Length: 113
Image (tube, rainbow, N blue to C red):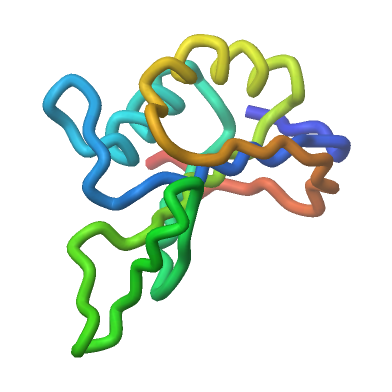
């Protein structure tokens, strides 16, 4: 797959424990992105954060949260990401979604054996 230099980055900020259809939401989103043929997706786990509820989650021992913030990052064209978001946005009950321009400098996979 070729990815144009003028790509876009979709960021979905959600909680680690958020679910959709019985699956963890971040897992479901990555599977949906793969099935949609998007260029790539990564899930990042935060060590501290807060969202629309203003409840702080932290990984500090005395305040250990079972619902840490996670960010799902997906890179592709703007058109593909807009189409993907239209399909999955109803699954995001609480969170934040951003879309920004990204200059793709390198997109390379391993050669298939």
